[in-house]
Amino acid sequence: MRRALVLPAVLAVAAAWGQDVGPNLVVNGDFEGEGGWRTNETRNIVEVEDAPSGTHVLMMDCAEPEYYFAIAGPDVPIEPRTLYRISLKIKREKGGGHLRVGGGYVDAEGNGLKRGSWSLHTYPINLQPGEARGDWHDYEGDFISARTDAAALALRIIIKNGVDTLYVDDVEIRRVERPEAPPLELPEAVIWPGHPSAMGMRVEDVAQADELLTVVTTGARMQFDIAGAGLTVRQRVPEERDLVRFDFEPPLGELSIARSDEDVCVLTGDEVALSVNPDGLIALGTNRRIEVAATSAIAPEHYRLVSDNLLAIDELGGFCIYPEQRLEYELEPSVFVETPEDVSEPGWTARLVAEGRKLVALGVFPPRPFPWEQSFEDRIAHSNRYPTDEAIRWMAEYCNILVLHQSIYAGGSSSGPYIIEDDEEYLRVIATAHDAGMEVCPYFNPGAYTVGDVDKQLALLRGHRERYGTDGFYFDGLGRKNEWPWSYYFIRRVRDMVGDACIYTHSTLNPPVNSPSIYCPFIDTWSDFQLRGEGQAIQGVDDPYLRYVVGTFNISNSIATLKGDKMAGTTERQRIRAMFHLHGRARWGYPGYNEDRDHLFTTWYFPTLDKMEAEWRAAQEE
Image (tube, rainbow, N blue to C red; front, side, top):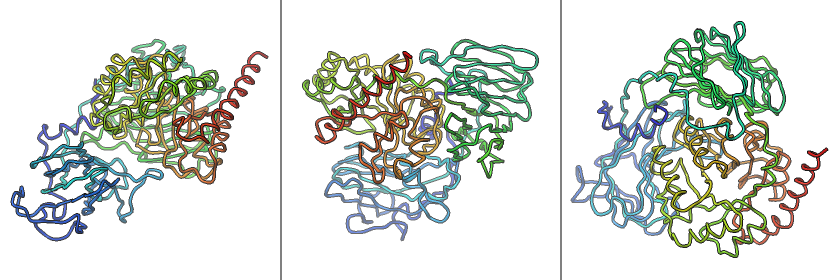
């Protein structure tokens, strides 16, 4: 499937394609000249006998473990949406810690670019402890910035949490020519595996009358002009209302039904295809240039336009427009040529030029009602390593879902390898939790894992469940370096894999552009719980970020939880109260480590949730 051909997988084999590359953009990359690198006694340019070229190399001598032992290199000029290859030669003496090569993106004024409170960076080369020890080794990796304001890469080499003496030579960054994009295979390119109907999201009706073709899903009513000139969307959850109209120029051509069942309705036209998915995604695949004009019927409280991705949300729902760029190929970008200056009243318009041979996500939401009963019944405890049987049975008095973080793995790294450190202990924990009535959800980080191939990641998860008998998963992010189709394919496949078991996803940085303020409700809704707000500056309980990014009510209608580690001027009780107000829930973090937190949860949070549940059930019986 073309969907599985994602950016990192393509870039990893870029050298095999034999593209032309440009000149080296790194100042003093062979360390034989002057300048470019901020050296000192422990990070210096030295003369060695076995230098791969010339006589000088860079030496980094890290004698004590540091979170980041780094050297700053030159700012390397780059252009956005352009492929670059970084390469260098490395030799390590001790091989301690993780080694990263890349850097942070800066704009034309030299200011570091950010995603919310976090810096925007790329580290295409990542070495595990011990790798490249003893002799010189060649490494390369490719990167692209989708941010249109990226003007340079501030080059960095980092040793993380380890002791090592590192030698580096022949650092290069070169522009790489990409191949021409093949046409989309339509309609296959707009069809994904998975069964949204298993989560209560269905295509309920498809009907044609006069010049209109109507598709009704659980969350929306969509009326297509048969000639493909436009699409009008009405929201059905939590109430009926007009949401948005999409107009297509030139028209999509006469639309015909290629497939219709409870999981998808597929329409085809003139070199185009659309899939109407009951999770809220209307996927448009086109092999020709089309302008998409969206006229909003709502005045959004949360409006974001980031790298030609638009999100508009009010208290009852919203819509999004996320063009795929297919950055692994030489293609003109899909761009907004018209955006509103004022969105305070309905009727504003945004116009996207969608280039051919790419997808466009037209998302409308919420796709399903809020799961009230599940929000009361499913309760989560987070644990590190292998809790004792006594601790598990204690947690099970309050919770029915046990999340096990990355310390269950050898090395405890978020990027893998995901090898259980102690099989016997792990199996004991799982058996005790199951006996106590708890689901077990182990940690996995799709965006940081060193193996980027989506199908290999899915095979790893499937093998883990089969070997150990775990239930759902806790995902620490999704495909951070990938466009939205990667994460969409991944989460749909995982839901098919785990059935009704819990999927808990932490997505402070979200598809479609690895940003904290713009996200994909049609992806989020496949998870039972969402966690956001890590490392983000949240200005108290009334910050709109809390409602429209952390909050999921009338958006994805998954169940929201909050990290909130940088939420200003609030206690944990106040943060939980704020989440209650948003119909969110709390996670019990590491029971047994903090007596005050444990007391807050066992004597206040869980009893409060019990009371809320009783009131809700009484209201259902009236």
